Length: 101
Image 1 (spheres, rainbow, N blue to C red):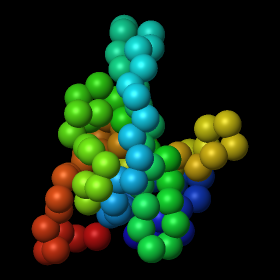
Image 2: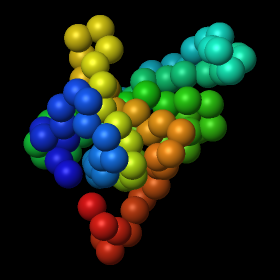
Image 3: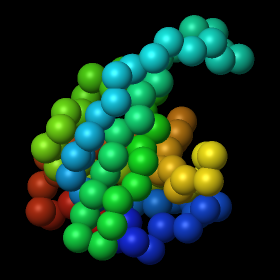
Image 4: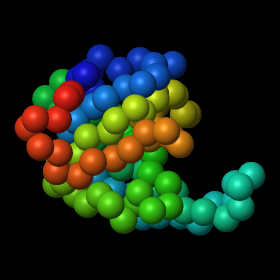
């Protein structure tokens, strides 16, 4: 799927793109305990979207990495579209061309 096609409420989303920005991680308190969260910007030739990265996923990605998000979901936060990996999704860094996208 292309980033320009994403809409709030979509589930089981598979998207591939390039990381163009990663914000500094911040410490947060969640219902599961303390954690870290960072926002990255994922871009393809159809547009860009903010991606929420939690804990160990933050260190997986860097600016200029090509990544694939598998089984993600889309919502809106403060009026901006956001792509989330979620509990059942995963991030693949430098996915192969054979990956099903």
